[in-house]
Image (cartoon, rainbow, N blue to C red; front, side, top):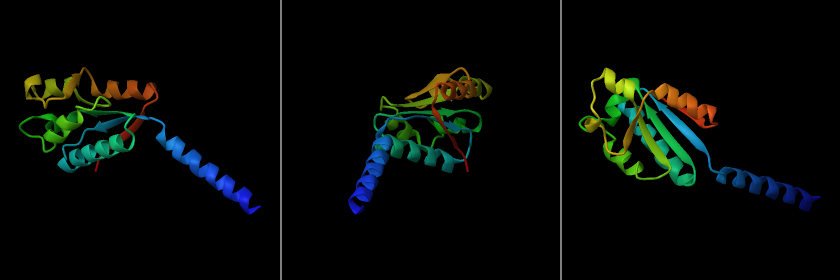
Length: 137
């Protein structure tokens, strides 16, 4: 009986490890102007991309998070530029937010791309089965 229980525990443990190794797809939603949120978002994406290197991560920024991607204002510019070099990590800024704040593409950190609508981008990812994380404090 002991051996049987040991085998079951080993199978459960192995199954848990294998399940965690399966690549995931996660979209991060960032709207906050709070630099702590910007820093925690970068921390989360970096940690998850290291833990799950074959997974896909997309950070969609809009609304109050515009400073997160501006070359002259971002506290995470270097981190974003470095992370954006990873083919599994994408940083996107809402084109509507850029227009509303009169931001030109040249003002945006290298590695960040505009999308026509940040909310629509998130909804489309969710329809495709991506997990969703709202970054907020």
